[in-house]
Image 1 (cartoon, protein in one colour):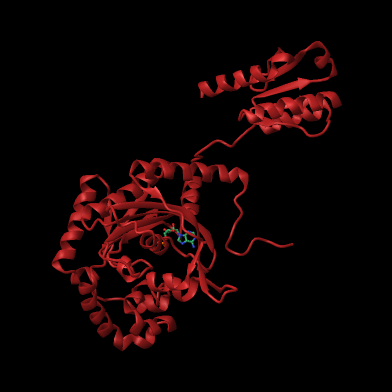
Image 2: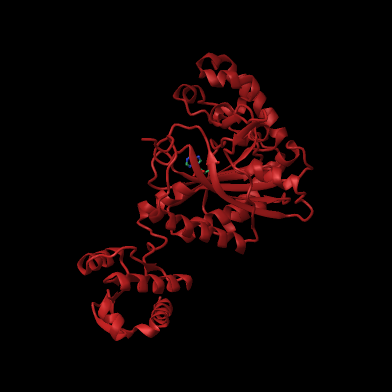
Length: 424
Ligand code: AMP
């Protein structure tokens, strides 16, 4: 038997109604904040991520699904959404009117070790705000993220916040880091020994216990921030506190991408275990330029959809009840089967969810199935009902029955459906 590839999963209809509801709510929220949906391709030129995310990051070095197509191009299944949005922003010259706001929703791919909450194909919701250098842009993005979780009913959250400074503050810190790590180089893992020259800041993001041991007593990046970066960070914190959004400073927070400058943040949820980050983001003032565009500062955020759904499940929150048919049509006999098939089709064309049997079955079997599928009503039509012009309509909730005229059956059921809708 062929199975879904390791680290991927099928989303079955019962679960996909939760997905649709979640996506719908996120879309609505983004619309209220003025963010427009941007859909980029699932695969991009490999170079986009190598340059955008950065050589030396775990994602580029170890986790990308890269392949050569039949035309000899190196392509990569997108591991994240920011670099593609920047590419599209430049390609379509979307910098004419700034600030510009975009959001995306869709699958991402990383060759990671699968475990609960960590997959090889997973889904992200993300936003990107271009052309706003001030601290309030950072606050807007963090506030939108915070509100998104809160509106879903997730309240046990912590926002971790840090500043990575700009190129200048980082250059000084990079030098100091190399000086401190030089005598301990042999204690680092093989990957980090390679990073030492290429991208030493990435060593701070290494999860291996070997490196964690060697990373103690290092100076914090925050002590190297230039006055402008310090002021920006201070104003982000003040903005968040003015909105009543709690954020905890975490000097260890570096995140897995090279493009961040100044603010970085991560949102973690209570009770998710090791994979507790439900979202993260930050400012990236140089990425647009690094990818060949003008200097456009930007800030963004991405959330993991699967992880949000895991938290909701832990909280026992169902975003939407399962879809059920409104009415179960139960024909008795061949003639009634075709008659109800026609009736059901007319109802379906009006958007009314109908359970429609495709074959003759006994009344007992049909009543059992009607119960099981959770329909509000069952309509029973046999040869006699067709002759008399009176069918039997059963209320499945109250257990009561009534006669309805077959001549007006579609209108009568449509009316019941409208009534039920207005009661909800
Ligand atoms: P990142 O793009 O790494 O900052 O991730 C943003 C969010 O996406 C994380 O906080 C997670 O919620 C989610 N995420 C990242 N990687 C995975 C993965 N492999 N499987 C499931 N969710 C993920």
